[in-house]
Length: 240
Image (cartoon, rainbow, N blue to C red):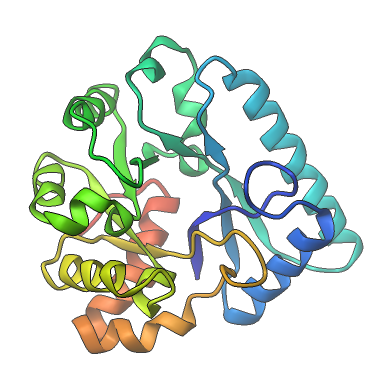
Protein backbone atom coordinates (compact mmCIF):
# COMPACT_ATOMS: atom_id res chain seq x y z
CA UNK A 1 0.00 0.00 0.00
CA UNK A 2 0.93 3.64 -0.52
CA UNK A 3 0.31 6.24 2.18
CA UNK A 4 -0.07 9.59 0.42
CA UNK A 5 -0.36 11.68 3.60
CA UNK A 6 2.02 11.03 6.50
CA UNK A 7 3.98 13.19 8.93
CA UNK A 8 6.93 10.83 9.16
CA UNK A 9 9.93 13.19 9.31
CA UNK A 10 11.68 13.87 12.64
CA UNK A 11 11.49 17.34 14.17
CA UNK A 12 9.81 18.87 11.11
CA UNK A 13 6.35 19.83 12.32
CA UNK A 14 3.88 18.36 14.83
CA UNK A 15 4.86 14.82 13.85
CA UNK A 16 7.63 12.74 15.46
CA UNK A 17 10.26 14.78 17.25
CA UNK A 18 13.13 12.30 17.13
CA UNK A 19 14.72 9.97 14.60
CA UNK A 20 13.87 7.03 16.86
CA UNK A 21 10.17 7.93 16.69
CA UNK A 22 10.31 8.20 12.90
CA UNK A 23 11.98 4.81 12.58
CA UNK A 24 9.36 3.27 14.88
CA UNK A 25 6.62 4.72 12.67
CA UNK A 26 8.23 3.26 9.56
CA UNK A 27 8.38 -0.17 11.20
CA UNK A 28 4.70 0.05 12.12
CA UNK A 29 3.80 1.08 8.57
CA UNK A 30 5.74 -1.82 7.05
CA UNK A 31 4.15 -4.31 9.42
CA UNK A 32 0.77 -3.00 8.29
CA UNK A 33 1.60 -3.48 4.60
CA UNK A 34 2.52 0.11 3.71
CA UNK A 35 5.62 -0.01 1.50
CA UNK A 36 5.64 3.58 0.21
CA UNK A 37 5.21 6.67 2.38
CA UNK A 38 4.88 10.19 1.03
CA UNK A 39 6.37 12.59 3.58
CA UNK A 40 3.91 15.48 3.80
CA UNK A 41 5.06 17.96 6.46
CA UNK A 42 2.86 21.01 6.98
CA UNK A 43 3.76 23.91 4.70
CA UNK A 44 2.43 27.17 6.15
CA UNK A 45 5.23 29.72 5.79
CA UNK A 46 4.82 31.00 2.24
CA UNK A 47 7.91 33.19 2.66
CA UNK A 48 10.11 30.23 3.52
CA UNK A 49 9.61 27.68 0.77
CA UNK A 50 13.33 27.19 0.06
CA UNK A 51 14.16 26.60 3.72
CA UNK A 52 11.17 24.24 4.03
CA UNK A 53 12.17 22.16 1.01
CA UNK A 54 15.83 22.01 2.04
CA UNK A 55 14.85 20.86 5.52
CA UNK A 56 12.36 18.31 4.18
CA UNK A 57 14.83 16.81 1.73
CA UNK A 58 17.64 16.65 4.29
CA UNK A 59 15.37 14.90 6.78
CA UNK A 60 14.20 12.39 4.17
CA UNK A 61 17.82 11.60 3.32
CA UNK A 62 18.72 11.28 7.00
CA UNK A 63 15.77 8.99 7.71
CA UNK A 64 16.49 6.78 4.69
CA UNK A 65 20.14 6.58 5.71
CA UNK A 66 19.21 5.55 9.24
CA UNK A 67 16.78 2.94 7.94
CA UNK A 68 19.40 1.58 5.53
CA UNK A 69 21.87 0.96 8.36
CA UNK A 70 19.15 -1.08 10.09
CA UNK A 71 18.34 -3.07 6.96
CA UNK A 72 14.85 -1.55 6.69
CA UNK A 73 13.69 -1.10 3.11
CA UNK A 74 10.93 1.44 2.49
CA UNK A 75 10.26 4.07 -0.13
CA UNK A 76 9.87 7.58 1.28
CA UNK A 77 8.83 10.16 -1.31
CA UNK A 78 8.60 13.94 -1.26
CA UNK A 79 5.43 15.89 -0.66
CA UNK A 80 3.82 18.51 1.56
CA UNK A 81 0.51 19.39 3.16
CA UNK A 82 -0.09 22.91 1.90
CA UNK A 83 -2.23 25.19 4.04
CA UNK A 84 -4.57 27.18 1.83
CA UNK A 85 -3.82 30.86 1.43
CA UNK A 86 -3.73 33.16 -1.57
CA UNK A 87 -0.16 34.25 -0.74
CA UNK A 88 0.95 30.86 -2.04
CA UNK A 89 0.70 32.20 -5.58
CA UNK A 90 3.26 34.92 -4.88
CA UNK A 91 6.10 32.41 -4.54
CA UNK A 92 8.08 30.42 -7.09
CA UNK A 93 8.53 26.68 -7.10
CA UNK A 94 5.08 25.56 -5.97
CA UNK A 95 5.51 22.42 -8.08
CA UNK A 96 8.16 21.22 -5.61
CA UNK A 97 5.40 20.82 -3.02
CA UNK A 98 3.43 18.31 -5.09
CA UNK A 99 3.20 14.62 -4.19
CA UNK A 100 6.15 12.65 -5.58
CA UNK A 101 6.79 15.25 -8.26
CA UNK A 102 3.34 14.70 -9.74
CA UNK A 103 0.62 17.19 -10.67
CA UNK A 104 -1.31 16.22 -7.53
CA UNK A 105 -0.92 18.61 -4.59
CA UNK A 106 -2.23 18.04 -1.05
CA UNK A 107 -4.02 21.04 0.45
CA UNK A 108 -5.35 21.66 3.95
CA UNK A 109 -8.37 23.67 5.04
CA UNK A 110 -8.52 25.29 8.48
CA UNK A 111 -10.25 23.04 11.00
CA UNK A 112 -12.89 25.48 12.19
CA UNK A 113 -13.77 27.67 9.21
CA UNK A 114 -14.33 27.41 5.46
CA UNK A 115 -12.53 30.43 3.97
CA UNK A 116 -14.41 32.51 1.42
CA UNK A 117 -11.46 32.18 -0.98
CA UNK A 118 -11.41 28.38 -0.92
CA UNK A 119 -12.90 27.92 -4.39
CA UNK A 120 -10.64 30.58 -5.88
CA UNK A 121 -7.56 29.03 -4.26
CA UNK A 122 -8.30 25.56 -5.63
CA UNK A 123 -9.25 26.95 -9.04
CA UNK A 124 -5.98 28.86 -9.33
CA UNK A 125 -4.06 25.69 -8.53
CA UNK A 126 -5.90 24.01 -11.38
CA UNK A 127 -5.04 26.88 -13.73
CA UNK A 128 -1.39 26.18 -12.93
CA UNK A 129 -1.84 22.54 -13.96
CA UNK A 130 -2.28 20.96 -10.53
CA UNK A 131 -4.97 18.60 -9.33
CA UNK A 132 -5.77 19.71 -5.76
CA UNK A 133 -6.37 17.03 -3.14
CA UNK A 134 -8.26 18.30 -0.09
CA UNK A 135 -6.85 16.64 3.03
CA UNK A 136 -9.35 15.31 5.59
CA UNK A 137 -12.34 17.53 4.69
CA UNK A 138 -14.40 15.47 7.14
CA UNK A 139 -12.58 17.22 9.99
CA UNK A 140 -13.55 20.74 8.90
CA UNK A 141 -16.26 22.08 11.19
CA UNK A 142 -18.20 23.80 8.40
CA UNK A 143 -18.15 20.72 6.15
CA UNK A 144 -19.33 18.60 9.09
CA UNK A 145 -22.28 20.99 9.36
CA UNK A 146 -22.82 21.35 5.59
CA UNK A 147 -21.26 18.49 3.55
CA UNK A 148 -22.56 20.10 0.36
CA UNK A 149 -19.68 22.57 0.66
CA UNK A 150 -17.37 19.73 -0.27
CA UNK A 151 -19.59 18.64 -3.16
CA UNK A 152 -19.09 22.03 -4.78
CA UNK A 153 -15.29 21.71 -4.56
CA UNK A 154 -15.37 18.19 -6.00
CA UNK A 155 -17.67 19.33 -8.79
CA UNK A 156 -15.12 22.01 -9.68
CA UNK A 157 -12.33 19.45 -10.06
CA UNK A 158 -10.71 18.89 -6.67
CA UNK A 159 -10.23 15.50 -5.03
CA UNK A 160 -10.80 14.53 -1.39
CA UNK A 161 -8.66 12.40 0.93
CA UNK A 162 -10.20 10.83 4.04
CA UNK A 163 -8.15 9.97 7.14
CA UNK A 164 -8.07 6.39 8.40
CA UNK A 165 -8.65 7.69 11.94
CA UNK A 166 -11.81 9.46 10.84
CA UNK A 167 -13.21 6.15 9.61
CA UNK A 168 -12.33 4.29 12.82
CA UNK A 169 -13.80 7.01 15.05
CA UNK A 170 -10.49 8.30 16.40
CA UNK A 171 -11.60 11.93 16.05
CA UNK A 172 -15.08 11.46 17.48
CA UNK A 173 -18.58 10.63 16.31
CA UNK A 174 -19.23 13.82 14.35
CA UNK A 175 -16.11 13.38 12.23
CA UNK A 176 -16.83 9.68 11.72
CA UNK A 177 -20.40 10.44 10.63
CA UNK A 178 -19.17 13.08 8.21
CA UNK A 179 -16.55 10.69 6.78
CA UNK A 180 -19.25 8.06 6.27
CA UNK A 181 -21.54 10.53 4.53
CA UNK A 182 -18.74 11.74 2.25
CA UNK A 183 -17.71 8.19 1.37
CA UNK A 184 -21.22 6.90 0.76
CA UNK A 185 -21.97 9.98 -1.36
CA UNK A 186 -18.89 9.21 -3.51
CA UNK A 187 -17.25 12.52 -2.70
CA UNK A 188 -14.03 10.83 -1.50
CA UNK A 189 -11.25 9.59 -3.76
CA UNK A 190 -8.57 8.14 -1.48
CA UNK A 191 -7.74 7.16 2.10
CA UNK A 192 -4.47 7.95 3.88
CA UNK A 193 -3.22 7.77 7.46
CA UNK A 194 -2.23 11.39 8.20
CA UNK A 195 -0.09 9.72 10.85
CA UNK A 196 1.76 11.93 13.35
CA UNK A 197 3.24 9.42 15.78
CA UNK A 198 3.59 5.76 16.62
CA UNK A 199 0.91 6.10 19.28
CA UNK A 200 -2.60 7.45 18.92
CA UNK A 201 -2.15 8.55 15.29
CA UNK A 202 0.05 5.78 13.92
CA UNK A 203 0.62 4.92 10.25
CA UNK A 204 -1.78 2.02 9.76
CA UNK A 205 -4.42 1.42 7.10
CA UNK A 206 -5.81 -2.02 7.89
CA UNK A 207 -7.64 -0.89 11.05
CA UNK A 208 -10.07 1.10 8.93
CA UNK A 209 -10.56 -1.29 6.02
CA UNK A 210 -13.19 -3.49 7.66
CA UNK A 211 -15.35 -0.45 8.42
CA UNK A 212 -14.65 0.99 4.98
CA UNK A 213 -15.82 -2.21 3.29
CA UNK A 214 -19.01 -2.20 5.37
CA UNK A 215 -19.76 1.36 4.29
CA UNK A 216 -18.91 1.25 0.58
CA UNK A 217 -18.16 -2.36 -0.36
CA UNK A 218 -14.95 -4.22 -1.11
CA UNK A 219 -14.45 -2.91 -4.64
CA UNK A 220 -14.76 0.74 -3.64
CA UNK A 221 -12.60 0.19 -0.56
CA UNK A 222 -9.86 -1.23 -2.77
CA UNK A 223 -10.11 1.77 -5.07
CA UNK A 224 -9.78 4.19 -2.15
CA UNK A 225 -6.92 2.39 -0.40
CA UNK A 226 -4.98 1.00 -3.36
CA UNK A 227 -5.93 1.96 -6.90
CA UNK A 228 -6.26 5.73 -6.60
CA UNK A 229 -3.19 6.21 -4.35
CA UNK A 230 -1.15 4.17 -6.81
CA UNK A 231 -2.35 6.31 -9.73
CA UNK A 232 -1.69 9.57 -7.87
CA UNK A 233 1.79 8.45 -6.88
CA UNK A 234 2.59 7.54 -10.51
CA UNK A 235 1.09 10.84 -11.78
CA UNK A 236 -1.44 8.81 -13.71
CA UNK A 237 -4.99 9.48 -14.76
CA UNK A 238 -7.74 8.55 -12.32
CA UNK A 239 -10.69 6.37 -13.21
CA UNK A 240 -13.36 8.24 -11.26
